[in-house]
Image (cartoon, rainbow, N blue to C red; front, side, top):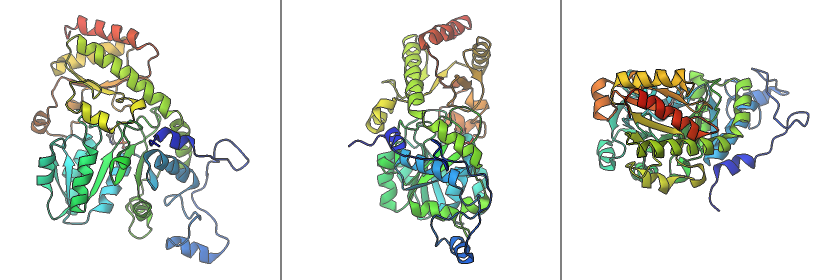
Length: 399
Ligand code: PLP
């Protein structure tokens, strides 16, 4: 039967300590042992099912991790305090001094800054490539390469990575494919397509209420256990742990993700099609003119659509700024970074979420000044929103 990520979440059953319909929240940083030997065994990783200390693991984090592993079809998952708290330990765990990463050049600015400016301090170098050009990806691999890194749908240009082909390439070279799936939870299931590790910023669609930051690393049990190892595990030693109270609330929000994603996708497709007909320059993987439209269709879990992210080119930074301010005044969304909220969020990534990327490199990758990235909200009547947005564009002579 076809893998359906939302069904996998639905199939889990939890009871709280007193038969509650939600699991009890673990309100402890440390845990008692009945026998001293069990504590020693837990330290050495030889004892399953015992909790030691909440930076290592906690019942609440394990519940959320289990649900996210089920969603991605991975053996295990480690919940983290932020998306960056998932990305950086993963790469630090996989790479040693002298190792090399081949990364997509169109990635979240924070990830780009980590790879470009921070990882070299530990002797880890990165080549940034056009991830849609498989020949360039292959040519960048060296004998020291340990990881191919990409986003399934990239931030902010919405380029779609060919996960099946990249995974074949990674396997051929005996290296790992790490995919950040933040923009397309449920839409795309990278592990099912051959990725080794999937990362999410839970801050975005998965939590969906813009009230916390969070992250997750989904992978094999062996890899996830290695991250938590008390002697050399990057998650354990760098310490980006999520608080139990938060992970309990993220788990509750995760249960409505399938409904939200369908609505985000439906609304984004509606706006993309309408604005395309109006002659606006628009990037959305659900449009036939998107360069990877067919590829997306080849990889996606169809019922969740093409996702809630789209980008338009307003022509110049000035026009982009004017449009965003006007749309906010008319309550069509918020001028804010981040994504996956009930309300539409927009920003001009060249000066915001991708500002870590030097201007020349932004130009090379096609990130124009006037680009506005939209995270389309859960608007009940999206045609009404379209009419109001169009009015703003007409007033500003963008249309
Ligand atoms: N990955 C992507 C694609 C993102 O857009 C972001 C944040 O914007 C991150 C990772 C980092 O996540 P966080 O802000 O939760 O650390």
